[in-house]
Amino acid sequence: MPNSSSITEFLLLPFADTRELQLLHFALFLAIYLAALLGNGLILTAVACDHRLHTPIYFFLLNLTLLDLGCISTTLPKAMANSLWDTKDISYQGCASQVLFLISFFDAEYSLITIMACDRYVAICKPLHYGTLLGSRACAQMAAAAWGSGFLHGVLNMANTFSLPLCQGNAVDQFFCEIPQILKLSCSDSDYHREHAVIGFSLCVFFCCFVFILLSYVQIFRAVFRMPSEHGRHKASSTCLPHLDVVSLFLSTIMFAHLKPTSISSQSLDLVVSFLYSVVPPTVNPLIYSMRNQELKDTVRKLSENFPYE
Image (cartoon, rainbow, N blue to C red; front, top):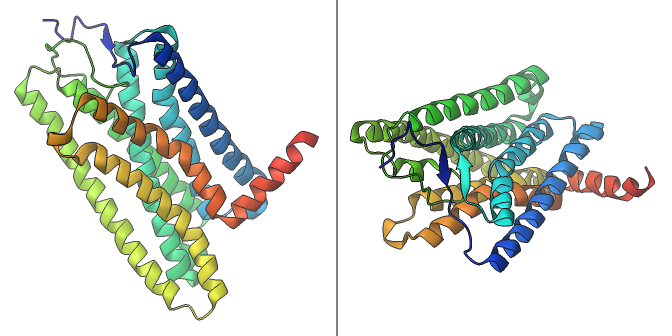
């Protein structure tokens, strides 16, 4: 059996075996990727061009959009190329890069949606302190911390995973390089447990962030329900509900992918579930924000109307 030092490439799992279905998947992936680029690009342009959106929540949304673009660009282009050219291989360095960037972007995105929950809590529950607690410098530092922690987490997981001796072949049962699938190729129990200790630590951080988001929204909804003005309740809800939808989509797909019972696990189901958590949120998030947030919706509409004339 090959070991890790002799492996120069990995074999990814194709979505289909027949050429017709491969081309159909390529067309589907291309449409999804272009939709994600268009949706996220519109939000980036709207936030950058409209001075009314130069506020902390939209600054964090801009960073979230960049992370979404990074997530989907890490996995989907390679899957598209493999479907188009009827190939399955990815280089060792390419596989390591996918692990590094995907973990980095996902970790940073989760940190960022936690920060956005904090932003909504301060804005609604402590509005008099909003400008003091969330000034431009503080926002930049929090965003930098999210990106930095995500990258460090990605480096740690990538270094840990690819330091394992691999002796179970080079076939990864996924359409991108996913850590649990690479761990199945390991032949060292001690290193395998070391990587699982890193994953366990990540899950603890994940759970702490989840509890923080949950408690923040409990306080937010209590404050919203106590507002005497219906207009005030509507305005507060319009900025909270899109973020809550994004949180729900992100967490539900991630948790189902990694916490589903092994009894219902299968190669096809794992493929579909991984597609859902790695591709669907980056594509749907712009739609959620553009449809549920009135300020952003108005700006995107103006950009769409003015685009043909400029």
